[in-house]
Length: 192
Image (cartoon, rainbow, N blue to C red; front, side):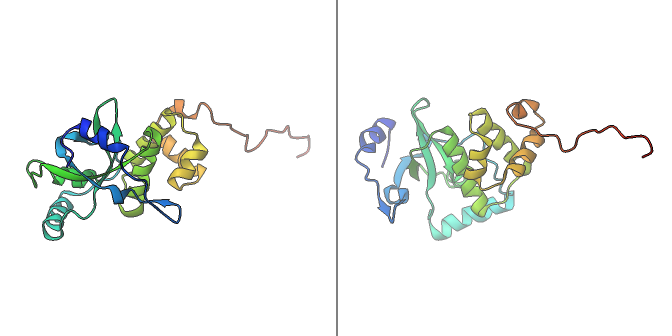
């Protein structure tokens, strides 16, 4: 069990990188972490209706905590920041399950990779809210991630990236976009 960040830092280098066929398997290094060392991220575009939260609580009570919270360690905040499993994190806390410890898998991702990972996890199984998706894309652009890389990481085409950018209503996001004229004005000749 991880009681303090210092315990995690001491253990971090001892965790083995487990792979199978070239795929990293972070869940092989699931840690039981004191819940107050974990924080929500500020950009999650996934939403779970209230009724589904109760179902999630019941599922955890009936089946156990089968899926760990995916997080990164943020050295500036000295805590774990949720990448995936925000609603499991909420359910584990006060007013729900009141768990002192939660299972956590720690990824070694920078900010833009962790934001893209949140999208990937959610898109693979959840229901998205378009406005929050657009906010996530805006945040990636503000992190300096190119449109092409956003499309590749999130599994969407450039037109979709542009549509999300338009939803944010911020012209600043288009400042580095190359435009082409779809048609040109030509002067009509007499008689036509």
